[in-house]
Length: 251
Image (cartoon, rainbow, N blue to C red; front, side):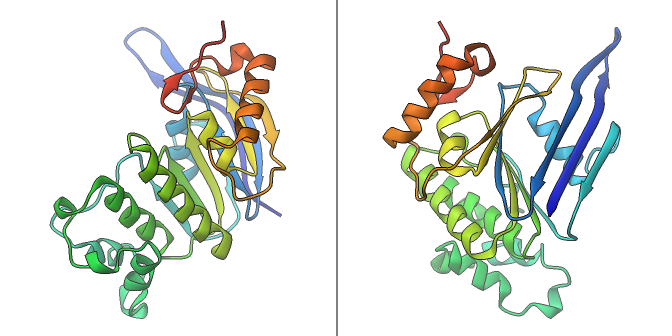
């Protein structure tokens, strides 16, 4: 069963002269329970795509169909309410709150944040704030979870710890995940499948299934070997992507 069907004929933004076409002719489906990564160079329309799928942007030509009622989304920044504690930030997302006693605390415990239930965002590290945001996204048991470069700008050990927490939650709860990144190693280590987008206007350039055993680490030899093969076979497609924070060269 497909959890998500995307057929975007055109998405554009008005400009002083003409328009900027962000997405054009982009079609793909994602199966129920699949962990799919979206990869593409900066500015290619990845965040715009997530906004359309989430229903935040309806000004486009095409059709997006979601199978399932609950949607969770985690943005590039945690977007926590600074005047609310970690517990209260997660409770804020519960619908309806009176029917879910203890659910926020349970999710924060799964994110290893029990000692910080009543801490405010300013008292939390960047990684802890990201964990609160993940707990908030998972608290309503989403059928589809959208993540936009969730681990961008974190140090490598913190980012890997959060990847492991995310994979653990996904393995137990099995939502469908669409994870946007421009880090090729991250995509190869996380996904069941990687969808590569072209530079804007975004189109699907390569749909890569991944049949690699789990657990995986971005620095595994198998991940590096696959990354090298992709760079050799698709140098133009992958130009501008990052691996470990450095720009790839296709020279």
